[in-house]
Image (cartoon, rainbow, N blue to C red):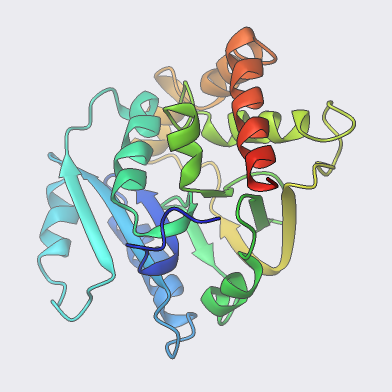
Length: 247
């Protein structure tokens, strides 16, 4: 079953919030496009940029109109890192694909032909996919665009990867933090790897770690919402949708 086929144009949308990281952003963009299988135009990239990020906005102006699979959303910073989930939802709403990759501006693609490799993997009607990130798992998920339609939001806080991870753990057999989630609706993709540039102490990093973001967001995600009535209700919505696909 697929309700999106009337307007899907791509296999996957990479959604990237960015703020005043122009040098890193250039590496981010170049790694995505230089390592892509150019014979397979099956992906789009959506960036969210803040109104006051003039350096990045000036950079956008240099781009050619030949790139028709790149979209820039320029709007308010709102509450900075604590509003990243809102920015992610703005990009998700614009995505023209069945699957969305919650990418970030501090990731560097490491795998050649990554887009074709992913196209061969993203075949399920509904599943969470995890490429390799710094040899780790269960971060920067690839999730169905349908996720937000089912729940009404991506997550109730900026720790979206934590929220998605825990809900999918609850659809497995163990129901508690295994090293790898044992749900049949989670798949690990060893063929695609990205590098995460961690602990960057630029303006964005400072905002993340010192002004109510970063680790505090993860604490909120795990303590305030972990196995809360809200999360359990959201898990039931996801399970009910998955079961409806079997009918």
